[in-house]
Amino acid sequence: MSDQHDDIRDEHYKQIITKTDELKESQAEFYTSRDETAELRKRSERINNELIELISRGPDPQKRIPFSKADDWRPRDLSDLGLNDGVINKLEDGGIKNLGELQDFWRSGNYLSSIKGIGEESSASIADAFADYAERHPEVYQGELAE
Image (cartoon, rainbow, N blue to C red; front, top):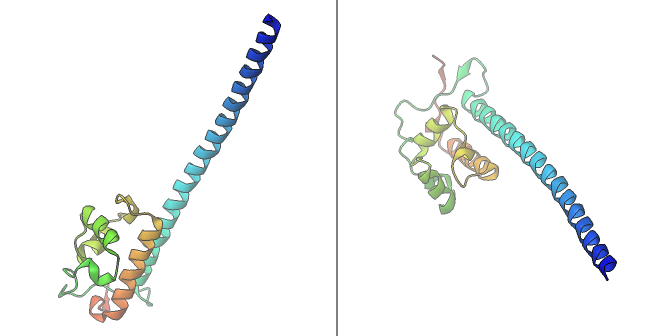
């Protein structure tokens, strides 16, 4: 009887070791994946910022297309971008209340994905919406030589 009990206990112990090894392997894959995801997020944000800079610079690399001096567009509501209420609420929770603050946020080197609840997809859709808004409202851009 004792040998049978020892065999059962040994088998149970082997199963525990096997599952522990599986867990370690799974955790290693998870941490590697998480690191890769973080790197991909940084790359995406860098490319997004480069795109925003490219859009604001315009077609002439010697010129920078600054926003209008009148800044009439700056206090415009985020809803003018056609974003859904959830995204607007997240931006506002992050301290961005209007289009001017959104542009200032980008210009200061910040990433939208640093705002709680805004990921890469939302960040890209906000940037696209801002670019679309600027395209429809030429007063946002004024072609002046960079200072």
